[in-house]
Each structure stands twice: as structure tokens, then as C-alpha cells.
Length: 117
Image: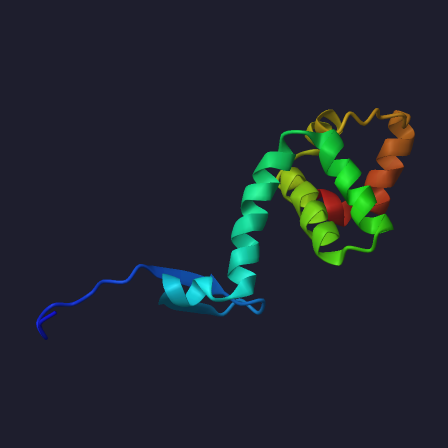
């Protein structure tokens, strides 16, 4: 390769747990076990989102077996599914029956008003 030729490497942006971003070559990022795990997690989550029963069974199993990484991943998946949804949408999604009287529901909304803002 002559000195005038340049090899263009694919760059990947990594985000640390404190929000700092880094741009690194793909081959460098792939050496990181965290990056590999995250890519695998993303694919895994796509598959389990389809079947809520499997997702909830995995949460129970991960909790019982004390598998923190799997518990975190599956709980985050449920949280992501709920994000931006209204109370009626969440009830419908998770087949939750509202057994509050209108008065009880109003009281709960008053006590937890911050959650409805």
C-alpha cells in the first residue's frame, strides 16, 4: 500500500454509563466484552419482546437464580415497553383489569400525582 492510500475503518460510537461518548474503530469496539454483550442483548430482546409469557418467565427465573445481568435486561425490556404509554395503554398491553372504583382511582391519582405529569 502506498503512503497516499488510506484505509477507512468503520467507526462506532460508544456511550459510557455516565453518558460520555467515544468514537472508536469497530475492531477496537469488538474487543470489548461489553460491546459484544450489548449487541447480543439487543438481538435477544427483539426476540423475547414478541412473547410476554416468555419475558415474564425469564424475569422470574433470573430473579430466583440470582442472574443479575439477565434480570436487569428483562426488566429494562418491560420498562422500555411501557415508556411513553398511558395508564389505559399499559393496562391493555399487560392485560391488567382496573378493579378500582372511580373514587379509589381518583384518590390514587391524587396521592401519586407526580406519576401522571
